[in-house]
Length: 232
Image (cartoon, rainbow, N blue to C red; front, side, top):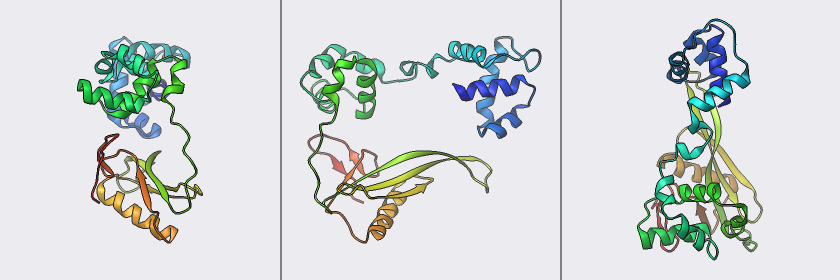
């Protein structure tokens, strides 16, 4: 919401949309989307400037999905239908197990990540102990590495002059927590495999076991009992 308020403040000050987009590092279509709403509500790029708080209140009313994630979560209603069942299951099971049972027994077609977001957002504090991951025992050296991507931010490509999303491929040795990190611009199969190769070169060896997050380049079908791993 802060970014939208900035867009509107710059626009209200009389800067054209292309200039606002370039200075704030956003797409021009994004600027047009939010300024069009302001214009439809009777605002124009002239006259007295509104304060940050005033713009924030307007944006909150115009775009409630930016404040309450339930407005933009397409899976919320599908999970909400099982609210009572979920609440009862969480008393003796982790969120992952509850998700698996709902999938197997009720045909719930919602991904695990979306389901966990629902649980964390909609259930009271006293349920959190039931969905936390229990601590694992120590892992011997060389036994395991954990692999995932993390979002780093945006980068202005000097060739295309466009903002690009940058991700970090991270491979962490479970025992020492020593890690290999490589920024990447894509998360396709070629990048995923190449980053593993570079990580093994960096460490000078390979762990006995790789534990991957549920992205398609690593895990094609997530299942608590029988996951389907990517052959690569």
